[in-house]
Image 1 (tube, helix red, strand yellow):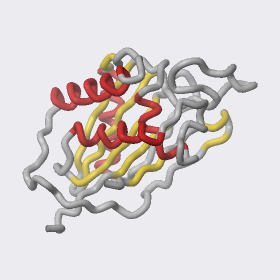
Image 2 (cartoon, rainbow, N blue to C red):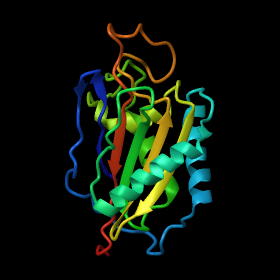
Image 3 (cartoon, rainbow, N blue to C red):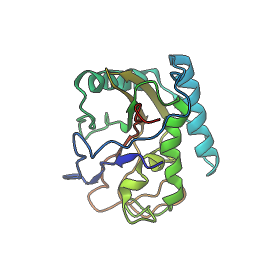
Length: 215
């Protein structure tokens, strides 16, 4: 499986790396089960909390608390992407209200919730716990940004939501405080902050799509 990903992160207070609004070509996969994947808010919450907790426990971090406020924020943005079909990060202020954000999109009903977060967690294969943005074995911070946010030690809360458009579904997870801060490690000791303050919390997106027409 090779789903598409792009990640946007603030490398300094005034320097942004922006994700492409529409993203590269879709990735097509054969469906193992043609039946729609289970859905529901309670199932989403349980799956996302478990997925985050498992990933964090593996590196010695406590689980995240569920935030209804973050979930509501995530829901509003997921619904906006479903309505417009525009897969890109939300514009957010560079202040204390800023939230971390992981995004995913794929064919409607084709992916279970644990597969969605599983795409993010699988990035740990390329993750090295070095100061941001040098935390990827591939040399591309875009390849591990979702995972880094999940295991960011200073993040304490998460809220997620899924919304569906005519063809695709959109998963948004919001985090507080945000992770992927330039000059800091995801967990363990970090060097002193950059002069003038480190970059703001990072963003991550992933696109996974199933070609329903494939046999």
